[in-house]
Image (cartoon, rainbow, N blue to C red):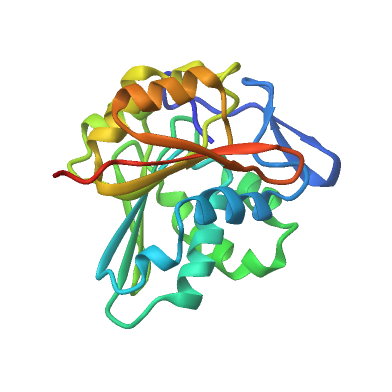
Length: 238
């Protein structure tokens, strides 16, 4: 998960039960305490109707606000590897102002052994992380573009558009910049026609910001103890 503030700062972490990473800066956990991997599958992969939507698409792009522990990317990569076809490519673009250290990522993901080989591959690249956009070919069909910048700056300097977005900042009450009208408009502008968004939060002002940006938004059943989540689509041009 990411913040909307100044980049190139370290992230202050504490570790709760079962090696749950907790942000001291934003007073929030990085993922669901029930099952972070299950949350990724339900909210972000399921909310964007993946992998069905990438079936038959030659080049599919996912955008993410907040790389955090890398869990969303790693679980998406796992599902992608299991379902992709020859000749398809996935580009996963994530904007992160406060990247974690490699050992913090390894510890945060260690509870899911299914992701261990992918985590190890990601961490081979981690020492190369720089302030410039990092573009890494993790396998022949998967690219990770990790932009170390606040979201608005990163989006302003990214000249492409996503088919699906993972909106995964910390709690809107604790990190409102990540859900601002300006940022939601920027996301809308860099979403393909018919592209989708998904988020765990259903905060009323976040929903209104997404609608004002132009997305058609609806509530769907949430994960674990959360009653609802948000999904949305950018209407196709007539």
